[in-house]
Length: 230
Image (cartoon, rainbow, N blue to C red; front, side):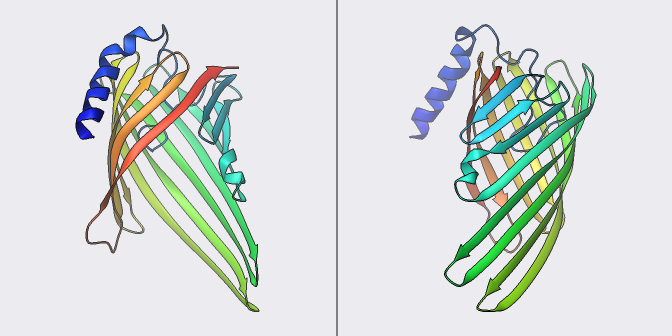
């Protein structure tokens, strides 16, 4: 299986230039491995993945949601605003919102989350960009179980940084590290991002080591979506 994946990866890298005329040119990435970058979608541009949807209202403002999560009664939305965008750097701020209601048998519970963040992107070489940022997360829950009310809140802060290397107009190598200051957990990840005229494919691996776990765990990074002008 590993040999097959390696062969497929080499094939995609070597043949990516033959699929379409336009790849990443004029369309900087809005996320690295996981973290947001300082860039937004262009005006009138759509991004549609497996549930996730994004739209560029202007060249500096994008909004989005995950419609798949609505099926599980998790109502969510996100917005991102680029406050600085030049040929060499970009700065953006964003926020994610989520709300979930559960009402089954004798259990009534609701959960709400808010996640504002800042992201900065900077060219550090002809083909390399640096992405850094930080995020604050707020979580609250309210439950009513057998006439007992309970309300809890928690919050946390995390920082992250990563590199983006453009191998070609259709292939990028991504690396990223993040650390949760509040819960003292860190993550590492790397991926290859392929971009054709409209289709995007991200393949990689991530390592997570939350607080209280002796050994971390490894998970694949798999993403696919379409990015196109409306």
